[in-house]
Image (spheres, rainbow, N blue to C red):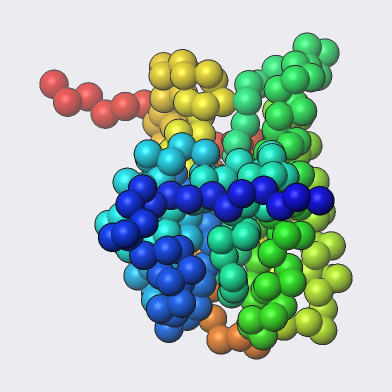
Length: 275
Ligand code: 8X3
């Protein structure tokens, strides 16, 4: 079968180093891939890993925004759509070796009861959160094993633990992603690859804006009256797990705001009056 043409980000090959040349200048901790890195947790994770000495490759569909993340930290930006096997093959073809894979690409589309389930949206969530993670991980497993010290991080969610009303399209996909991560850990036992799941609660990113199709007021209300996590709070957890000594496998970190104790137990305070 013909291999898809490798993705090229550089526009002027005479002045820009090729991706492989750049990666060959190995950073002290090796190469890390972060998916869904054009904003939010993915972008913050790319910055945190670069700071820790990883040579970072960021992937996402929105290439312009991806470059805004990659350029300041000297990372390599490559187009990636985790729902498209051809895109994953082209992306992986540019990356000769890998130590750390952060499966961050994901998201929710809509909130409605099962009685009104939007099957197209639910299918998209399944593709993006579950099958996307399966595909990318499967593709990179041989390179991770060859590194002699590989690590797969999956960004899950409290939605992978707690179902909530009108959320089954997303919580179902996140429960499946969690089952995938636990299974991977069992299957890789004895191989030099660690597996970590990071499960955040409410994090103020574009997550809710995407979920509600750009309805800003509805998205804002998700974080109203509490102090949510920031993308950087979650990125710190990922970077911490990734920089433990090789014999230490951080299996999972559930991280939520102090104002949240489960997907549905959230305390909100009235806004303070300023006049
Ligand atoms: C996002 C957390 O609780 O909004 O993964 O589903 S939640």
